[in-house]
Image (tube, rainbow, N blue to C red; front, side, top):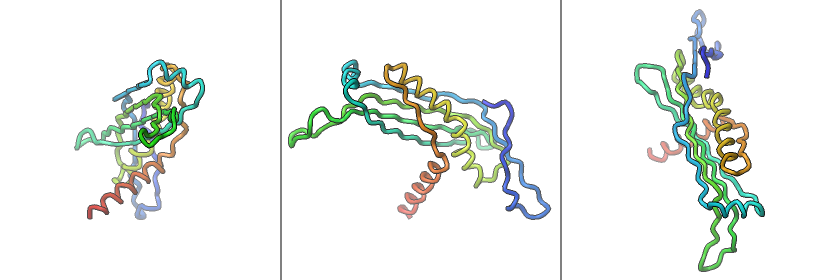
Length: 183
């Protein structure tokens, strides 16, 4: 967490001559775990199976934002991370029984930050909340998930760095495509 607001750089090319750019400031007021779940559905037997096989992992990350009070520039930014580890099917598929992957563990974390952003135009505000705040809280998310997997008896899962610009762009493109489909 920061004690002082950070000042973000401005694009001075967009301001008319003689006018100064608005001062944008952002500070993370607090961070917290909103929800944490870690399940090992295969109980103790899954640890024996892991000695012979390596699981595949599927990792999903999503970022959402919400303004906490309509008249104040205070926002909750929630990063939801879900990790699902599975082993390949134990037996090949047959006509009577399709092959089913065996779950190793499912971990879900919703980690939030409450941020104050002032002086940001609407087109920049979304980028600050969807890119910059997640960049600042990601190390905490990575650390929590690493600790939880290790403390649950598995090798620690260390998330690789995330390109939050790409994540934001994909989310925007997805929402535009959905909106166009309803037009």
